[in-house]
Image 1 (tube, rainbow, N blue to C red):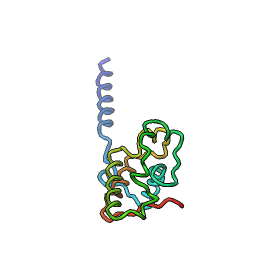
Image 2: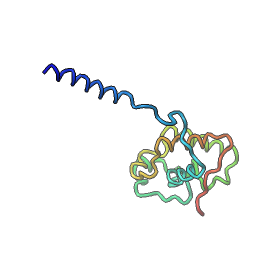
Image 3: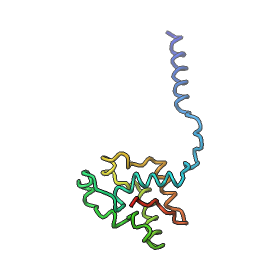
Image 4: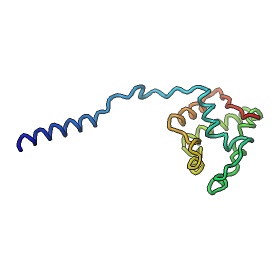
Length: 144
C-alpha cells in the first residue's frame, strides 16, 4: 500500500507537468501568409453571395434577421468597384476591415446555413490586413 502512494503521486505529477507545458508553437507571433489569390478566394466565398449584382438570395436569406438587411449591395457592391472613386474605395476598405474584425461580416445567421461563407480566425486576419493596406488593393471582379 505504501508503495502505491508514491507511484501514484509521481504519475500524477508527470501527467500534470506534461499537460501544463505544451511546448513552443512554430511562428507563434507571425501572421499567416496570405497571397492576393488567397484573399480573392475568401472574398468570392464569403462576400460575393450578397455583395455583387450576380448574387441571388438563397432561401435562408429571406428569413429574419438576414431579410432585414437587404441593402448589402447598396452598402458594398463588388460589381460596381470600378465605378467607385478613391474616397468611396477607401471607405469601403475601411468598412470591410472593421466589419470582418468585429465579426459582424459575414453575418452569423447567414453562415449558420452557408458554412462555406464562414471565416476562420486566420482568414479574418488575412482579410483585415488586406483591407487595411494603404494602397487600396483591388478586389476581384465578379464574372459578368
